[in-house]
Image 1 (cartoon, helix red, strand yellow):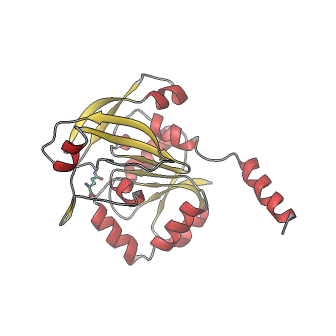
Image 2: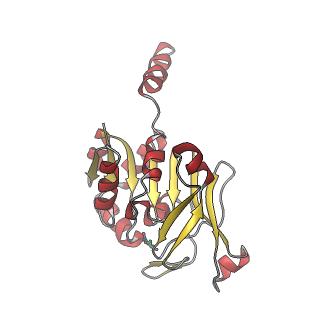
Length: 209
Ligand code: GLN
């Protein structure tokens, strides 16, 4: 089965192209029922307020929540990260803006350990959200230090988290679909449970029903 890419607005084409580069089929998702045909989902970057309005208009939120609850892998990039967050602060009308736009070489030890390649990743930030607080089950995969006059960032001494994983959820504040390094896409593919695992969980629960 293919990987779904939420295609309401934003950089969904770029994600589909990045998946193609690693030999994976990505399909555009615009309707709730299309989620039934995909193993996992990428929520792309774009403009989170617009994307949320469109998702609401298409009545997608209940199906998206269900998809997450079923333990299927979901990866949010930038605006997609905001979708997956429990709480977003610093929202201004028309969208939040915590980190400005820039490119930086960021250290990503976990990515290099799983996917090989250089120990850092060239990350493209476009009016990106910053992760300022994580829950106890969240694994921090990358953080950066930035200079900012914004109160929330100054409080954390300029150190902001930019990539996290929590169970079946992955979130990056930057845009790996805009660079040719496909390691984040390969990393996300490894979050898919092996088919036999899914089958054995289903059959053992049936035994006790
Ligand atoms: N800050 C943007 C928003 O709120 C996200 C930007 C992006 O996805 N590049 O939607």
